[in-house]
Amino acid sequence: MRRFTADASHELRSPLTVIRTAVDVALARPRAATDYQKVLHSVQVEVEHMGRVLEQLLLLAQADAGSLRPLLREIDVADLVEELAARWRVAAEARQVEVAAEIPDLGTVQADPDLLRRALDNMVENAVRHSPALAHITVSARREEGACRTFAQLMTTR
Image (cartoon, rainbow, N blue to C red):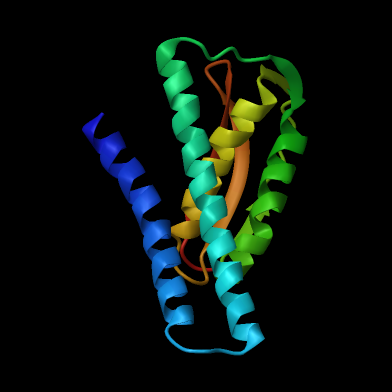
């Protein structure tokens, strides 16, 4: 619990620091409209990140309180893996990281699509954010002991 609290605090403090610094620098002297647009874009990115962190905290609080009610649906595993990789390709390319999908033929799984997407997005987002330039991330899935497992494998060279 201490580690989680520290991680959550860091995840919220870092974007807040970036926002504060960007705004302070932008307000320090008059700038061109394009400079303000760049600042607003960077603030937007950080606000979106903070929103995702807050959504995850709310989800964890609901789960801890026993009020989280998953809505199970049949999900095609191959589609899930491809969509997951596709969602993160643009963000990864901006960091000079490649995201590929290894498409499995595993049929379907029963899961809550929103909860599963949040968990898997968090996994790939962390892989992208903490990967060095020119890294290669492969998103894949396989069956282990009757369960379907999804992975984001990181290779540090292309």
